[in-house]
Length: 258
Image (cartoon, rainbow, N blue to C red; front, side, top):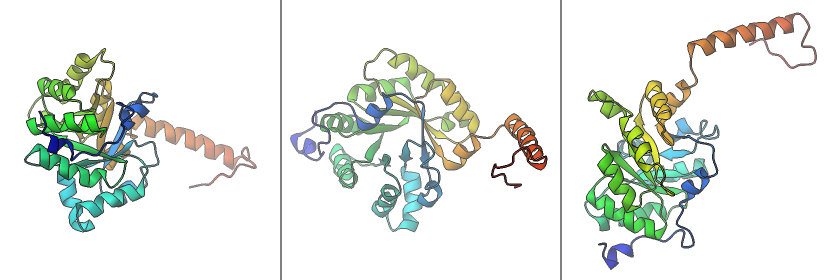
């Protein structure tokens, strides 16, 4: 059980509702959602294109914070560039530390969502934060038993890792399929986010197998639009379009040659 001192560290966000902001939005339809990771300047042009939000992890935080003056200034830059959720991964050696660190970031903006690794301390933190209305992601999930445990603790989003399983010779999206089956029928089940997705093929498998959400780098998101047949047929249609222009069939239409 969390101590009274631990509970006091979490700031209440939604006293009149037990449905987190992203969860509320997702229940309106339009899934699956795509979230991006990357350096602020790399993401700013992609965020208006239907992206659900920004997701960080401690690897990228450590990398980007070195050029942005620290983690807090970095998160402020993400917040300044979008009104969408910004998921901040935190870590710590105890429940008290996780909650104290988390509050530094949740105090910055209601846009902030906390991402916490899959640990026993994380279980306790998820339970406290659920009561306080703070939306949470659970990362480093590699098994169905872990997913079940953190779901019962109250986490809002579960992140099965994909590429590390593939790198180890496993099925990168098996856990996504298992979570979809296990949570089927839950009235307020956690969302399943495919995480550490580094290729279009893995993104395809995650969507095929029922992921509610996916987080990837902006470059993979860009490449998700590529297909050789799309390239072939886009050229066919563009050639016809320009032929109409050259033959005066598009008079009054602002056509450009390139």
